[in-house]
Image 1: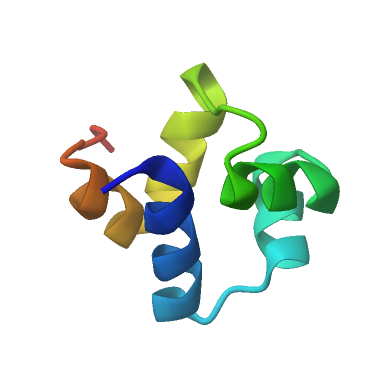
Image 2: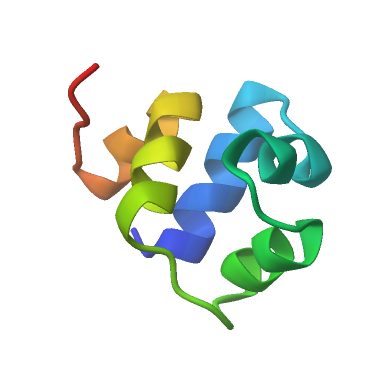
Amino acid sequence: MEFPEALTASLEEAGVRDVEFAAAIGVSQATVIAWKKGKKGIRGRRLIAAIKILPGLGRRLGLQVAA
């Protein structure tokens, strides 16, 4: 599964809104929307934070982050 689809599904599964997720990882809501549309990529510490907040994201991407 590609990142945009994985993020969208994980947010829906967790019941987390874009604005809440954005605040939790320190980006704007516009950035989250761009990620969901595939217009921007995510990497590094933001990706790690996203997986910690949304375990379903890591599962969908086949990634694990140590606690």
